[in-house]
Length: 372
Length: 256
Image (cartoon, rainbow over all chains, first blue to last red; front, side, top):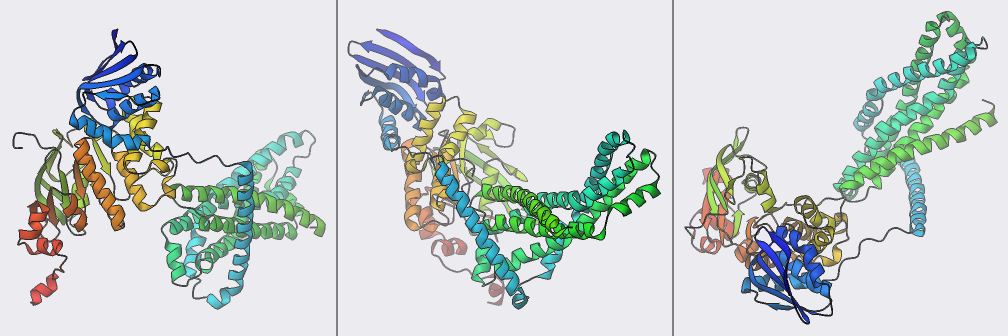
């Protein structure tokens, strides 16, 4: 019985001949990548019957590359036992001989998915590393007066410029928008009770005590926490951190402290700007709804006490310190490979946001206990 | 050999960056089944010449014909017929080695998935990385990355392989293994191989012919069988290169 199993693919074709207990796959033409693509299913299907002897007739094969040889060897594998190869030219036989050991090599196992226990262990280890980082950071702060030469003030100013000055437009824009939205959303229901002038009290307290520091910290985490992580991470990938270590320079003092100082100083400044912009946004809405500006000013002055401002600014300092520390830590913990820097930046942003919200909760409880 | 069209036919190539001329009037041919080495010291334009050959850097003057087609005449399919290994491997960091090798097969062939896996495993097996198919590029050594990059360059069984500094930074044993692999590819599969290198041992072991560039001469200073050049060439830079001698700098030459 003879039948063509596949139409010619370019110059290659396959004819399947079955005689009693033997099935012969007769290839012709060039066995290359396009031929392998065209003949693959038919070849494996025809070779799949282990009850018959498999013969690979290569007498009409003009040339064979590694893809073609792989096709022949996979046919043998699908058959389950060795095939009889006939008519192969010396060059084709040489390619088969070259590819056979490679095809027979044990397949590398893909990396197994991390089990839950491994993941928990990784989280535990990461928490331990974080704690160690905190310890090193405190040590670096304590030693800083003795290592002032390593603390480069130009780096502090550059980090302050990037984290603070360049964030001013974004902070002002966000502040105005938040003030506008909060005021508008509060005004509509409160007007029904004739309490529209108290919108100023509500927004002023909300922005100055809570939203101002919180949103500024989000901006810092998104802009600067990720930048710190990417910058330090790239230095680590390029072995610049190793170079510093071999020079006897402490990376904590030279790289982390300047960024921490810059973020801790600039956060309260940005928060003041965010508060101010938020109050301006609120005032725009209220005056648009007919509340005189002097009334708005009076209500704000009545609602806020200095402790609201100082409490907010203290929060800002804490958030700035946390966001910068998490960003730097993510950079120092960067792994190897091009993806590592991106992962470090992501973990800096996510970690910064989570830490900010958690610290906000802790400080809210603390302020409450202190009666602020 | 005269009647057979060359695999690479470069004529009058010139490249400059600003006012700095890297080389000019570089002409050479590479015949089918040859291992052709491009040699020269650092900064002589070896990698620039390779970028011109693979279609990444149009020459300021001259032409490059690869497999009978002009590299810069809009024939995009020619790039699927050449395999390139970059100096640092250029493996995709987000993919395993197997996926790296499967990528050209996936994008540029009609092989079904099982066939792509099988072919990619064979290529990794040929370079001795069958056991590392599931590893990420970040988990392997520099030598393994170079071998994986060769496997990826060979994915589509191209008739022409261009390898940029395949032995640079490798230990002698790994380097010798790569040399053997290159010769096997040439001998068993008939692949033409162009190697950009300045590894002397590797050049003498594998190259049938070579072309030597020199920064101060601004172009080609020698072409031919590297063993003959090493033995007979009178050009001082060529002699210095093959005999590992220091060449006097311009200031000392003036002073001499």
